[in-house]
Image (cartoon, rainbow over all chains, first blue to last red; front, side, top):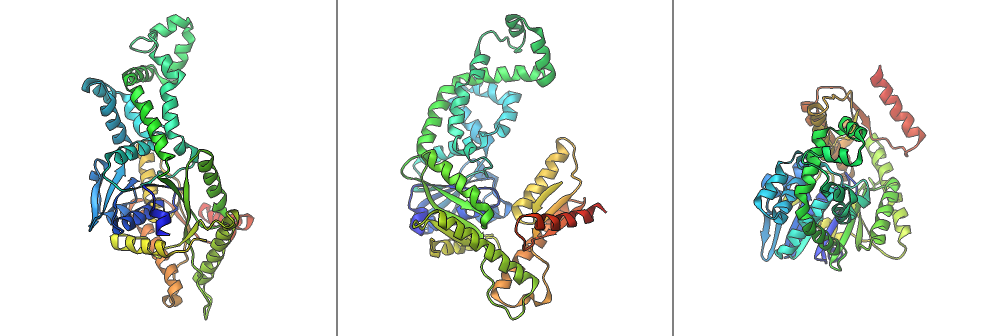
Length: 348
Length: 103
């Protein structure tokens, strides 16, 4: 199982919110380091406890921080921060410092960088590419943002390319906008109401900021496009595996299947499916109490979920049940114990 | 109304959401619901490896509820994890618990 989970250069851990993705990614990364690989785990702003467990703070948003070393193996942790990655990208592609400053100072950029749908996902991919290209690591594990719409994440590079090529952007770059983004347009299309309407809806200053932003951004578009293409190829490369982490129980199966189908359709390669937080059977008891009968119910429910999922992959043995931990791992030692359990678990 | 689980990350996200609602649009939630709580421990819970799981998960719930209480002084409703399939029976049981709060 350890080879199935760690045998590739790049592992992308995906799944819904609250299924324990971040903890499993950290445990796998520690296991990889203990097996002697130079390993990096990249995670989006993880839980406080996991930050403590890995012993990293804000500084890991800028550069990877060493959290474990033994023999040839090491573990570095990096926290993904969409805004800082975006800033770094702009410094890389801006023709000069003035152009970069012009973008940073723009109000629209300040809002956009942290909030535009898909940006966080794209920035995760972008940072991954930077780290992969650095050549410092034999094994990289990426913990992804929780995804509601699986496609948001998988299509992030395409969406960035489409944004760059979009009509809206070409439109804004057209010289018939003045610096405040209004007068020439009104003259040109001779429709005063349009600007009054847009004033009311979004505000003239906002529109001006938007146009200014797109113009300042224009020189960066070529760099962005080629980079997004490279990120897309990396995700589909032979050495990349997507590990899906799913919650237990029959209700979670449709979500898991939906995501697996999307991964397959879009040409990505999937590894084992980790079904996490499976309640173990409490076993026979002299007296049945409330807690025990609840655990018994949950164990039965989770077994039904596993059986349902296993039936959908006949003969494949690619489902890895992971028992619910009594206490979530809080340090390297307990993360290591979790990895031991993962490595010893049997695929079904 | 904010719904959460009494586990570390959901509680952290709840606290951040309360703060963002306050600082941004100036909204204060009417209610926070902590759903899916493991039942409180009885005296008999001490023995056996499996009931350790229950005890440990309940302690996680309690620790996170205290952390929530330290940062949220508004109404809080605790809903138990019930051995019921999603469906009318579960909805009815949760609705009964919510109706309690309205009173």
